Length: 328
Image 1 (cartoon, helix red, strand yellow):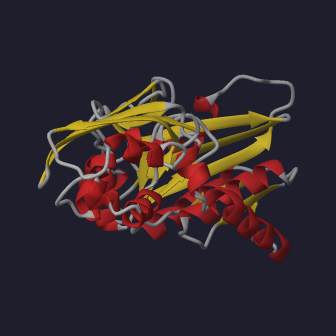
Image 2 (spheres, rainbow, N blue to C red):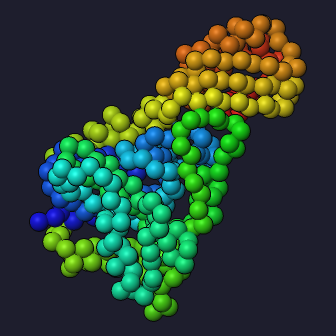
Image 3 (cartoon, rainbow, N blue to C red):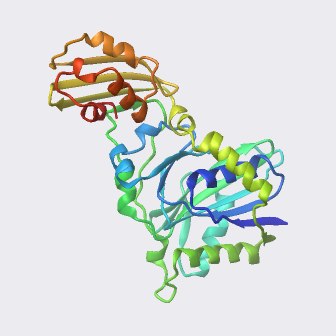
């Protein structure tokens, strides 16, 4: 019998930890339905900073969390529903997205919505994407999960996932942006479900059409998931530091003059740095560069460093909060 778990949490760090724990630490076949409050979920092999608009992330208080599956970055809010299917794969080692997405297409068909599988891992309605899917295979187990844009804020999607490609140069695979749509906009007028009601429809479909039965996380499972969330999904190292090597470049016009920053980042830390510009300084820029080497490319860390070393000695007339914007 397959466990059907509807997670009560909307914290992305907990939910992604729950998914990994149930995949790697149990032998059960499991279907999970879950929602995240505002978050950008980064693919396992992606460069975090090259996928997000940092200003918008901070403005809206959006979480940024890396998942264990590949694929591109996606925006989650409470208008988006996530489904995960965990099962034994046996000796098979190929990714089969269409097989696991089929129940979603079938459910929508019963609601009068004509959806189709397209390309490598997308689901479309009228040529517009409403679901992206990803998979992870390990030790004879497969994790398939996908997004279901139901009533998501599509304007916010474009805003938080837009970044200047000239600022960060990375060999990591960038996300491919597609025209997106919400499922709700295609439902018949007599099926005006809320997101929570739609989750119930999805749950009922799995219960009635497969061998699923409702299940809850045990106390032991919850404790273990919290521990995993703390050690991994709530850490800067996993979400940002695990990005592939990348180069960062930015030129800004500050109160002190023009400042150009060039960085090489490895394992989340600054390995090489150069500073150019027509600014004035009391202490040599080479000394400033020496402080950067080995430092995490992380806003709070660099802010603390700049306040400690008296940044005005290197960039006369500049405050820390003005200079820090050159680094992100």
